[in-house]
Amino acid sequence: MTPQLERQVRVSKMLALGFVFTLWPGAVVTSPIAVVLGIRGMIIIERSEERMAGRVIAWWCIIVGSLETFAVFLMYVEGSLKWFLCAQFQL
Image (cartoon, rainbow, N blue to C red; front, side):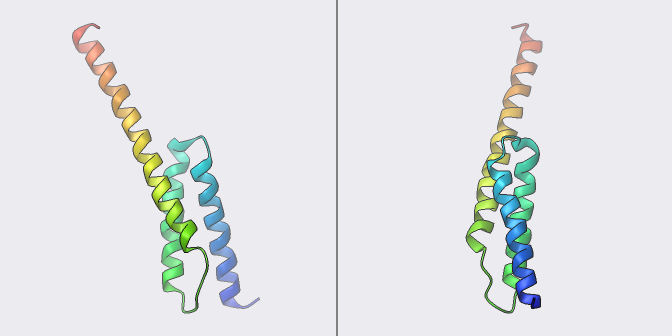
């Protein structure tokens, strides 16, 4: 295998894992990992001397993973506020 083909296979596997992590129900852990894998894949694609596939999947991992991470963060903030308000005002 040529070095370019090896790089393409490695990026494809990495982005496939990131895609699965965006669909996985354990968003607390897997969404940030999907974002990191998407960014890493995008960096490898951009630095490549030859054309490489995977740019759309990399963007998917970055965008969807970020949205899921933000949603999880909002759920934690909501839960913390409910706990604080219930403790503060004896609700």
